[in-house]
Image 1 (spheres, rainbow, N blue to C red):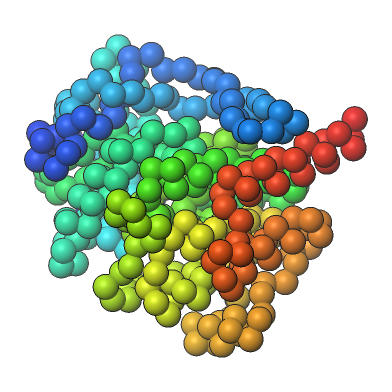
Image 2: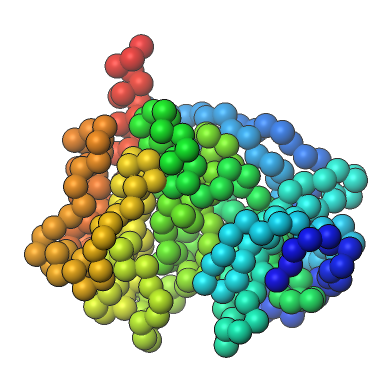
Amino acid sequence: MCHGNSSDVKTNYINASVIHGYTKHVYTATQDVKDAWIYENIYDSKDIVKKEGFKNPFETQERETELDPNRLRLEHELGQGNFGSVVKGVYMLKNNKYVAVAVKTLKEDIPGQKSEIVKEAEIMSKLDHPNIVRLIGVTQSPEFMLVMELAPQGPLHKFLEKNRKMKVLDILVLMLQVDEGMNYLESQHFVHRDLAARNVLVVSKNFVKISDFGMSRAMGVGNEYYRAEQAGKWPLKWYALECIYYHKFSSKGDVWSYGITMWEAVSYGGKPYQGMGGSVIIEKLESGYRLPKPDNCSDAVYTLMLKCWETNPDDRPSFMEIGIILSQYIQNERNKKK
């Protein structure tokens, strides 16, 4: 566990070649910190929202395989996860400017934890998208850590709990960004397996990033799904039935989770299936029950959620289709207000 003054903590960044296939993909901070940037949404349809202004704490690019450990300072804990905690830190760029970072540390008492976090590092190192948290580097002293860019506003559900005056349309813009990130993830042949509002991090009120790839897996060449050998500590409230029963995870399973995440967001951080146990939820889902329409949610948006929760995975929309539907809805609603 890393807390307090970083002068008490000695860190050495490992040679990137230690992690298989890692050298080519490690991201480090650029010398210039950009306070604002324009994110361009790319869609097939021309009548969709084209530009949103966002703030990015810093950009990263493929420049080095190791970070200077003397430039990293660990501060206070941000939260706990299955395999450890996330600590806020500060990293000094080569131009002597400081940027805030998030550092994922390991718990000492969990068998196999290092191999799991190494898998997460391998996956993150292969991803490069504005709406996915970027890996900056790794360290293995005094314990193995992931150093990532920081989203200062924290998890989406907690952000929305404190910002209930935020318009639903603006929330949907954030969900459109989540869709963009997930569409990219699918294009890279990965399944997330833990998409939820708690794993969508807020950089600013206009900009979010998908995080926590500890459960993510690559789909084999020619395969459209990943099959887990056995059940684990899974977030059942966000899982489709085929994931629960057959341990079969595909992008269409992530689409189901996306629908739950959208429900959380439009509910301003509401808890899905509150008060229900896992066996009760499964029984109700089998009988056709789905989460009710949130207050202030339009019929069109709720219909999209229901499409994400179709029992047959083939009947669910793809992330590309969700992006088109949601973008057109946002544009139409904005046109009504002109």
